[in-house]
Length: 523
Image (cartoon, rainbow, N blue to C red; front, side, top):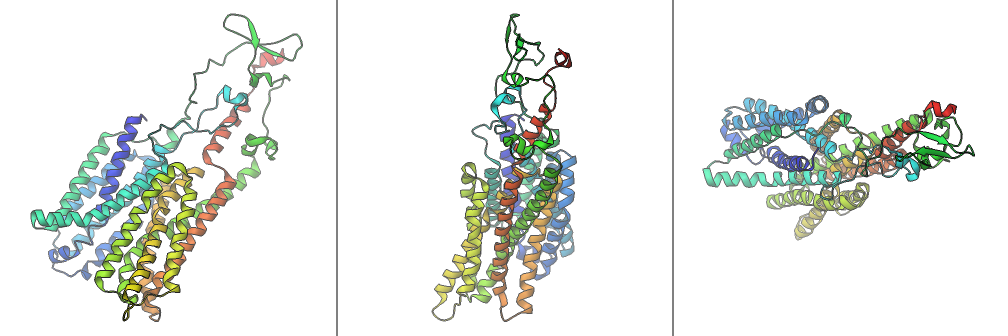
């Protein structure tokens, strides 16, 4: 794919992520308007958000299958067109039932957009393995096994964090768009038409741009060096019978390349799986055998299990904590409603801004190091209100606000880079195709549903603790995501990077072929 086309795709993916953030957060700020429109109350709108969560779960795996079998931009364009129609119809729905059906249809496409962008970005920015060449066989070793990256092209981890930031900015912009439409037109419901227009523009762009190719259709990239001469040559043996000579272009004889000189005996050299004992250098370590493949398969299961656990815990923190921190402030910490709203806004602001440093850090540092730096903050944020429970009684109001606000910021910063950085880390060790992206989206949906559902139930069943269960659940999820990261790092080191394994496999394929024609072997 040409560099200009890559840049256009990346810009539009950021725009779609921004629009997605607006769409995902527009219902809450317009709840009173929707209730008035349907002659109901805000509490009666609960099925609208309930159906949205159910449709998010329902759309995960089908979205992944579509990305593996249909051009990615066609999937995105179709989803965006459905969203356009849905957001045009929502301001005209006269009943809660029609709102449920309309927003449910829109929510079915949310996972298609989320999964689709993740897949396309991975396919667009993941480096392709480099073809082995004769020169690389002659002592250059494995090398990096990657095609050179243009200086302006961001790393996968950086761009995934940038997409998350644009999504967060969209969520922060949604209330402002509603206020702007109220000021300009007298009705905040016109914000739905703004969201529909943005979706329509993005759909048109996706129809005009070519999709990044699926990994299964990508060939290895030739090494960035001078084109090699054709490999057909005539080889002879000198008078000693041990030194190989080649015919040059002017008809004279010259010493054969080093990788041919290595053939001092007539039989072809074949790398055998018995060399996989760790004693033959990096290539021998990477060549597969029956035992190595079985061990790698087990490590892959462990790695992916830890990755799914991390994603589940991270998404639980993101949405569960964000949904219930207001109630915790008012019911548990004793703060007033205004303070609860400010701390809730602080959470989303810290969560969005927490991804900004990760954009730049991912360019220079391994994403695993970024996660190791940030994830412990969530553990501290969960412990702090448990060690020093906030209470706004009497003169302790400022102390309660400080403790709750500090905990909120730490949890937000610790969870901010979890999903984009862990997804980028996963692509370094395993292939993340459309189906696997669909599984990840489904796990995200489960995390986004279970945590917000369980916390109020625990607060109701065990009123002695009340909404202190939020901090207990936060500490549990923060610990799980950190443990998942440590397991991913250990299993990943044992497996080795995916690109290096692919590169080694291509070399193994080349080394198992005779370098000289059989006629010369007979000579």
